[in-house]
Image (cartoon, rainbow, N blue to C red; front, top):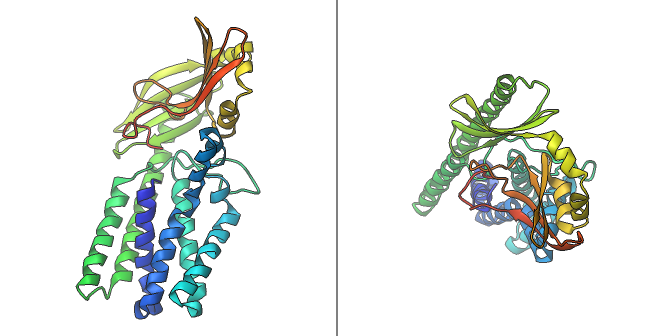
Amino acid sequence: MDTGSHLLFGVTLAGLACLEPAVVQDPALAHAILAGTLLGSHAPDLDTFARLKGYAYYVQIHRGVTHSLPALLIWPILFALPLAGIFGVWDHLLSLYAWIFAAVVLHVGLDLFNTYGVQCLRPFSKKWLHLDTLCLYEPFLFALHALGAGVWFFAWHGGGGSYVGEMFALIYAAAIFYMAIRTMQRNRHVKRVKIALNREDGICHLVPSLSWFLWQFVLESDCCFYLGEIRFGQVIVHEQYSKKDYNQHETHPVVQASMSTKGVRAFLTFAQRIHVSWKEKNDGYLVEWRDARFWHKQRKFPFGVDVQLDRDMKVVSDRIGMDKKAWDPPFV
C-alpha cells in the first residue's frame, strides 16, 4: 500500500498494543512500541533507496528481499534492540519485538493483497504473489484507521483513553471483515469474467479501483489477451490482442536486440502478462514491452519499457517505468 497508509496502520497498531496492561501502565513502553510500529510499518519499503542506482535496479529488488521471510524476523531485531535501550524497557524487549514484528508482517500482508504483489516467500521462491484485492490506497481502510487515531489523540490529551485497545480491536476486526468481503467479491468477479468470455481455462487478473463497483481485468487465454472492466457486475471487454501477433513480435530480430538492456531484463523478472510490439521510425526502431495487467482505461499500457534502437539495431536508449499520472488508474 502507499506510504501514508502503512504509517497510519503503524500508529493504530500501537493503539492495539494498549490491550496489554503493561503498555497502558508504562508510558515509556507505550512510546517505544509506537516508535517501533512506525518504523516497522515502513521498513520493508526502505528498498526505495535502490532508486539511487537507477529505476531498472529498483524494479528488480522492490518488494523482494526487504519483504522476504528472513526480513520479517530481521527488521524487528534491528529496531527493538536500540529502542529498548533508548526508552529503557529491556524488561519488555520480547513484547516490543512482537509488536514491531506485527507491524512488518502487516506491511507485507497488505502489499500481498495489492495487484503489484510481493516476493514474500524468498529465499525459497522468487515467485511474485498477489491477491488482486486492494488498491494501493484504500479510502475505507484509511478513513477507518484515521478516525481511530484521531479519537485516540483527543482522548489521550483529554486524560481519557481507558478503552483504546478495545477500540482498535474493533477497528482491526472491521478492517479484516472488509478485506474478506473484497476477497469474496474478487473471486466472484474472476468467475464472472471467465464465464462471460467462455474462457474457463484462462488466467485472469483483476485490478480494483477506488469504487467498490468498478474493477479492471485482463484475461490471458491460449490465443488472446482480453482487457476490460466489470461495472456493477457487468463484464465489458474494451480490447482484444492476439497472442499470435505477440509471438511473431517476440522472435523478431528487432525485439531480440532490445533484450540486452537493463530495463528489459528488470522488466522480465517482474512482468507476468507480457505484450511486446515494435515499430520502425525514421532513425531506427522503437520496441515497447508492456505488462498487460496494468492497462489504462484509455487503452494504453502504462507500465513497461521503451527501447530505442538505431538502424543497425544497436541500443540508443531505454526507459522503464509507469507512464501515467498518480491519480489515474490502475492504482498499484
